[in-house]
Image (cartoon, rainbow, N blue to C red; front, side):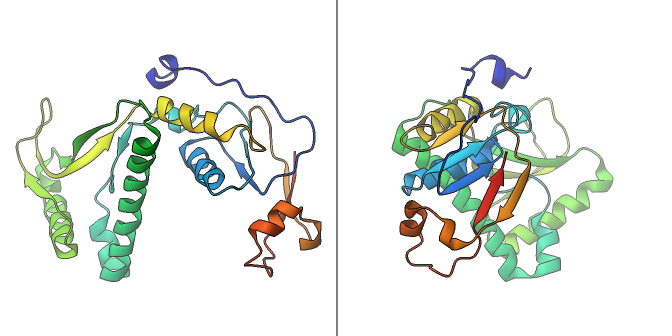
Length: 228
C-alpha cells in the first residue's frame, strides 16, 4: 500500500453486470484513462471507463507525483534520431499536457496540494557528466529553458540539469475528483470488470448518440464492440 492510496479516499465503483450503451469505452483506470474519460465527458460524450481491479492502484499508485515536460535525458536522443522539428513537437505535446493538468485544477478548484517545484536530472558519477552536458546542449539548441548546476538539493551530489517551474501534486486526490465527475449522467466507471475481447462492428449498429457526435465524420469505420 503506497502513501497515495493509504491517505486518501478509496473509490468503490460497481462492477458492470448489465449491457450499456455509450459513445466511448476506455480500458484502464490509471491517470491516462481517467484523464481521457474526464475530457471526453466534458465534450458531452457518454463514457464508460473499465478497470479490472480498482482505479488508481497499479502504476499510478506508485507515482513520484511530479508533473514535468521531461523525465530523463531524452531530448538529445530525439534530436539526433528524428531532427529538430520532431523534437519540438515532442516538447510541445508534453508542455500542452502539463498546462492541461494545471488548467483542469484551476477551472475546477481541485484541492490536491499542487505546487510548483524544480526538476533536477543529475549524475553522481563523473563519467556520466558528459551525458548531462550533451543533453543541456540539445535543450539549448531547441530553445528549452534549463540550467547546468553542480549545487544539488541535499542529500544529492553531482552534476545536473535544473528545469524550473515544473510541478507536483497529490495524484489520488486529483484523480478522485476526476473520477467522481466522470461517473453519472450516462457515463460510468466500472471496477473489477475485465475486458475479454474487442470486435469491429458495422456503423449501422451505432446508437443515435454516437451518430450525432460523429455527424461530421460519417465515414468513420473504427467502431468497436467490447466483450466483457
